[in-house]
Image (cartoon, rainbow, N blue to C red):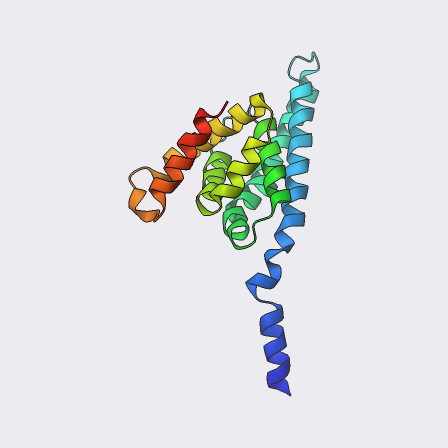
Length: 171
């Protein structure tokens, strides 16, 4: 009887059982990150320097404690269980945070593209032109960086490069 419980626990607690759970948490992190970024951007030309500094500290703290942490596991989780709702929220966050110099999101986005290129391409084609240009630039930069001198690691490198070049031409 103990073996049955052990088997249930093992299969019930396997990574695949948790794979869908990432979506809820990821979406909440992305939504909060956009909110904090919007709050920060709203203070950029404000005369209230203290409020500006406070909003910036909140955004930086969220970046360090939640956003970057979520991004560090997003590729693995997304590649196991690709969710368009998560990708949609992530893309919205990439667009919203185009004011940021943080390169890590572009690298993660390229990682998502490397495992689910058709899904990423389909989502990009749905964007309005300004957002599409922002996202394509993120993807192009991220892809160049994750594949630099590592083309051989990507079995489908040529296919990915062709897809990337194709969407870069799309207007």
